[in-house]
Length: 336
Ligand code: KG4
Ligand code: ZN
Picture 1 (tube, rainbow, N blue to C red):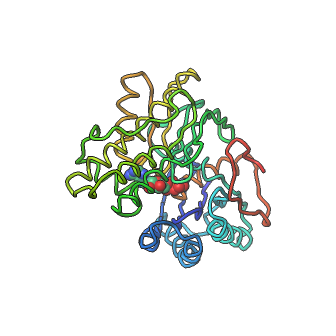
Picture 2: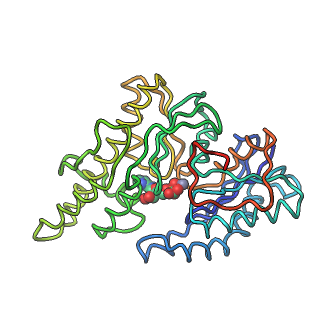
Picture 3: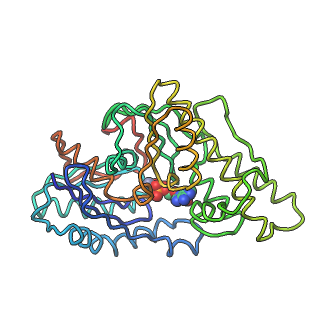
């Protein structure tokens, strides 16, 4: 089945064409990073407006890149939530309009399930069941995944998401936006053991990242002068290591407890080079098979939405044209 995927839950307007839920024909992503960077974070009103400007050209580009037309498309998959409602509505409305005009089936997809499904677009794919860490700007969740639409949450953050911890630290240190990307790049030249930041909730399956951010703030307040350009890589490398270590340890612990060896790592923060390296190293030495999609499929994209959509459509699911966007949508209650 040839599916057009559409994603607009946050600050990326994306469309993709995927065949049979695994063959990526096109993957177009229009990022709004430059617009939001001067505010140091996403401004929801601006995000919605930018999605409106981008949505039609992005969809047309995705069809063009795949060398197909709407006549070839057999179904539409669109992110329904979770995300910013104003942003979600742009993609959802575009999907409904195409579905109505072309009399095509369409389904609303959970963005978090999309992140997990991004692994099915890669060459090396896990068999169910597996453990999945979804780690992004809004979520840090560990799931037991038995099948599509069959998720059990094993651990989640009690406060900030890991991506949020990166973004807030970069803001505190005034080193740029988006924080995760800037820290990842800068940390490559730094000493990971320069400062020992706290690793919170060691004995729990849940995460907490507000402490590490507060700890950074305390370090900054105690100093008589700001960190120099030479010191900054050490600060961010130490901070990154504290977050990465907790993510790797808790995810592998969840796999151990569940007696599973396949581990999927996905979501925007899975683009982090140290996280990828540590997961692969630890996985190998401790007997886990770790699956991490390429970076372009870790951050928000519509291809992952098309994968889930194809699965739902193939099972006969059809959503009505009055389907609403949802800002919150936990993965273990997939059909609301
Ligand atoms: O999945 P995503 O694109 O959007 C959400 O659904 O949230 O994730 C965005 C998050 C941001 O917090 C961003 O700082 C983080 O992913 N991120 C990274 C990296 N690239 C993006 N964090 C650490 N290292 C990176 N290389
Ligand atoms: Zn995301």
